[in-house]
Image (cartoon, rainbow, N blue to C red; front, top):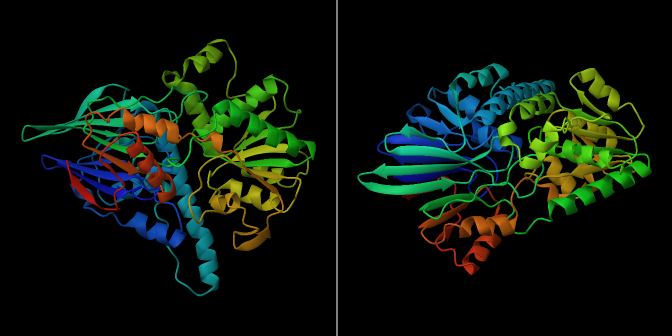
Length: 464
């Protein structure tokens, strides 16, 4: 039995881990690496293993850094099953199609400039048509249902509380009468967040724990404190007649923010200004959210059963049409715009930021972790000048970061998560984290008597 860390090792994005047992090869996640575009293209295009030798894929959730390279995997010859929860199955299909569309648009834009410079055109990483080939391979699995995924490998998906359908993957492995229980956390959610249930902790019989460490350097503020901070930022922006622009992941974060805004308006805490969700993907994802009540927490179920439109309210408009999106940027009246992508690297949010960034009345609100080299990270780092679509813009708008809204566990819950297995675990591997998150967590875990904690190198392997 062998485990190899091919992605999200000593970085956050590109989750991809290979498990080998009895001659079978199981891939846990197949995500896009996100960073500098030239480096990202190269890393995402070339897999560090023979794609045709993979027997099954198990997907923790639909976010692109966990699912986004599945079209390439299929394009290069993979034709086996992709196991995931029912909600993840639906979300992954729409997200990959959207990602393929974005890849095509980015290649078109890049080639426009390359042609002017006399340079050869580039091909998109994959197309929307490529992405469509993934859907027939997706296999929906219910939470807590155990299935055989290979000879000597049984998988069970447990609620991770991160986004709709997100799961930790329990793998019970047996080879030559040796048994191992491997638990891959995927992305760990938080307690007390709106809409979803709290994450399930691993059981105490886990031999090998592989867990995320994104925010291993600090505990988060509580959800209520983050809610109040979000409200304060919006209130002061609207008081100065500005726009609030929020780069937001279409799946998960957008629905939670809409839930919070609905509450603010229900309680009369904001002036009556329009709210726009400007992302076709977010609109489609919200429709999927409405269909998967099995993922809701008790409070969300009660709201829905009472007839409360938790993801809709009077001042909220979901925008599909591109012309309607463009029209928002010609207006000067106060408003709130949520738009994808969450790291402000593609999609309509880039245009909204471009039109808003040089007006000091406006606010750009950063509500999630931002990958290095992305526009979102540059804004979060308070760079005074940023490049947007090849042009330099002076950042005069207020930049507000509301970290407590993260859908990832903070240091305190990560310690509790790892401590749940400290009685038996032979190894704890910290993945999905930069050094600034993983290394402080590693030290904290040692202080809490969690043994054998490692921060594996990319493409390194361990025998289980």
